[in-house]
Image (tube, rainbow, N blue to C red):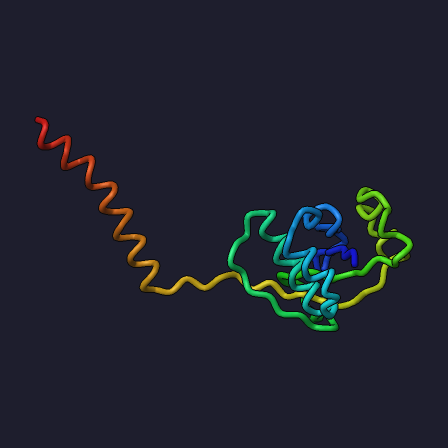
Length: 140
């Protein structure tokens, strides 16, 4: 199954699984196992976000998108006769709307950093900054 991700609340195509998931073992396994569209949509959103450098996000699938704009993607499935279409074909939103089927929405939730984790990272950074100062003072 080929999925196209459109930024929710905008007219911007964000990704095509034929591009960002083409060499992914996770994508191939889920597509081969013929998992439901809800799981495949979440996998597509996660793989796209990871390709853009957004790691450890959480995802929620819904068959309908929310009314308000927010973090997430509207997911469109390409018809079977368009699986071999070049990726540039789906950069045009009109082609996505006319030739693909809306299958749902994936909400993207940023990772939550615990207060303890934040404090320990800050303490490590302060130690790293203070270490060169101690060495410079000792060499004087």
